[in-house]
Amino acid sequence: MSRRKKKRGPFAKEEGDTNPTSFNLTALMDILSNIIFFLMASFGAQTLELTSASKVTLPSSTSEMTLKMSISVAVGMEEMFVEDEPILKLNNGELTGLDSERFLPKLEETLKRIKAQRLAKNEKPKEEDEVVLFIADKRLRYAVIDRVMKTCARVGFTKFRYAVSKK
Image 1 (spheres, rainbow, N blue to C red):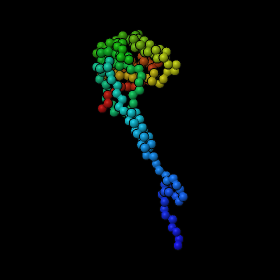
Image 2 (cartoon, rainbow, N blue to C red):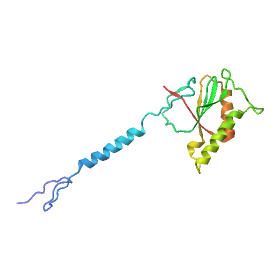
Image 3 (cartoon, rainbow, N blue to C red):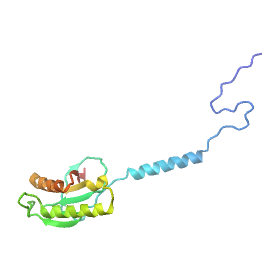
């Protein structure tokens, strides 16, 4: 008589083996729960509440990029804000207070002051410290947006992120 070997699975008990292989499902469920929790927390919706620029009508977009905190420059049809601080009045979307080189001295002074304050706090500037979150009314002319961006670049803020409303 020949003895046929039975097929055994990878976790089957071998002859002479006193400890059967088993899984502790509680530990695996804990790990899975933690992973799901952190994924849900990181993919949460990011919104920005515009307190100072409430009269700004943002352009719409379907972008899914995440929002990183940076210096906010908001330009509406009537007023300009830097970090929720009103710095300049606009005349129905037209800039006032341009210097001889067509830059905005009040915006320049404010950005220099904010940059100096942030550099005093940090030894090494972070990436988000050099980015401007540009909040512009969709009804503004390109020339106005161009002047504001060139003034920001003159101070050293050459990277921009644009605020839009989600469709």
